[in-house]
Length: 125
Ligand code: TYC
Figure 1 (cartoon, rainbow, N blue to C red):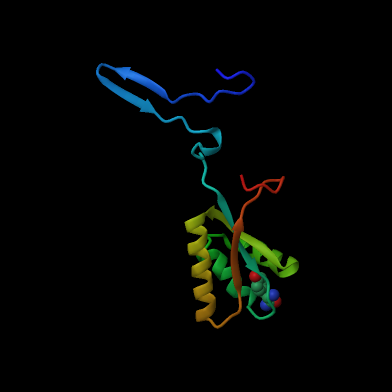
Figure 2 (cartoon, helix red, strand yellow):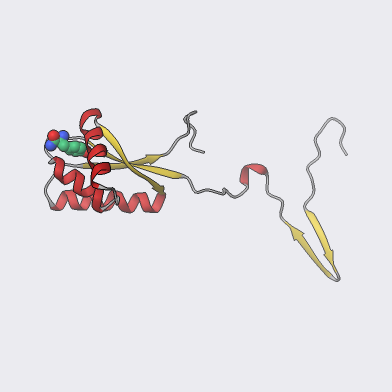
């Protein structure tokens, strides 16, 4: 022990007969997360995409009811942006790609993006 210095804990070893198992002890900062980080999928307002198209996207891609889809579309229409849903990274990415492909196919400028979900302190996790 070195005086005045926090000695680092050595790796734990467990003896089982002749087999020595070394257990890796991760520092707290490296422990596995229980929940994956989440991402908000955002629909941005524009002046050209018909309201009906946005409602249909919300129903078909985000499985929203007609009344929820209408409320989310109107929120984007009045505030400039709305959260269509919150998902793990790969799911959010697939939703953005799907909406972008449907908008392109319909030759509409509807913009769909994703961003990390943050808590009330603005922290990602
Ligand atoms: N502002 C569009 C209109 O008046 C409708 C609209 C709503 C477009 C939401 C995009 O994310 C959007 N036709």
